Structure formats: structure tokens, C-alpha cells
Image (cartoon, rainbow, N blue to C red):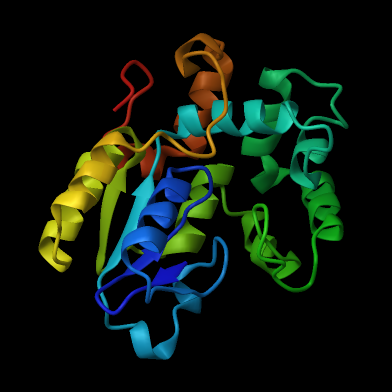
Amino acid sequence: MLVTDRFVFLHLHKSGGTFVNAFLARFFPGARHVGYHLPRACIPESARALPIFGLVRNPWDYYVSWYSFQADKAQPNALFRIASDAGRLDFAGTIANLVNLCEDPQRHAALIDSLPEQFVNRGINLTRNCVRPLLGSGLGFYSFLFDRMFGAGSGTTFGRMESLRADLLAFLETHATVTGEMRDWIASAPPLNTSTHADFRTCYDARLRDLVARRDERVIARFDYSFDLAS
């Protein structure tokens, strides 16, 4: 979460936020870094009337990116270890477990046990209390993160990761003074914190595709995402 004197940026996990954070750090030197992946509920009282900017991503694409990023790490995080049965499962098995955490008491309890009591401001930055509401929610993991981050989304302008540069610029043109240097940086700066992976549509079988469609239905419908198109 970054707080400027004009707006607040909420950083949803693996949805393009590192790019926005880098931009704000460069061009808004007075921005306050309140915490990493902290939700709307943690906005300081003095900033709660400010407009909010957030990013969202196609859930099918999110799961591929998350899996690829963690699978390439020498020490993947606890969430990956639990969903993948300590690396024994492939993409389909791991993501099915992740998306179904909402109805898996055993894995949900293992996740709670693996998490800290307080925010550590790195990684996915979830605490035990953060993930308790996931069980019984019926939500896919990405939808759970979205709801935790933004709530109902009132007062929030959403950009899509798929059109991040244009959407960020459009938000800034409404809520800040945009310089030519800012425009050039947004247009030309390289993507940040990315993972290398195949087109998400090649990674799913029909069963897993439909599972994500069901569990993450609200995000998919709200932002008009589909499996067949990246936007």
C-alpha cells in the first residue's frame, strides 16, 4: 500500500503492482509505504477519504503466474508447499487444491499453522487471521484475495493488468498532474517482477478451467474476463 496526498494505491498480489509501486516511488517522492499487500481496512485514518487505485488480473492467468513463480524458487512459500503436497503435484493438482482451499479444512488448517500472527511485509504477507475467513467462503483463492484487499470496491478505480499502462495513465490524468516524463516512463519502462510461463490457456484441462470459472465467478463476471480471451 502506498499513500500519496492525492490517492491510495492498493497492491493486489501478482497483479502488476510492482510496476505501479516503482512508478510512484520515482514520481511521488512523498508517498508513504504503509505496508506490503495490505488491504483497504489498513488505510490510515487520515487517508480514508482519498480515491483508491487498484489492479486486477484474469484469474486463470493469475494461477499460472503464481504457480510458475513459486515452482521456480529454490524455497517456495508455505502456500505452494501445502497446495502442491510438497512439490509432488503438477500444475493441475496444485491449482485445484489452491482453488478449493475454501472447502478443505485440513489444508486450510495447515496454511494457518504455517503463517505468522503479525504482518511481515514481504511475500504474500498474510497472517493467520487473514486466511481464517477463506474456509467456507466458496471463493477461489484469487477472489478471496480480491475481496480481502478491496471489499465491495466502493471509491476504487480498477485497472486491469492486461491494460495496466493505459489504465494507470487514465487514473493519473484524473487525480494528479501528469508530466511528459511520467508518460514516457509508463510507456517504456520494462515489466517488473514477472515470471516466464506459457499462455495460460494452454495450461488447463476442461475440469480445472471450469473449477476456476466457478470459484472465481464474481471477479470474472465483474471485469468481463473469459478463458478464451486474455481480457
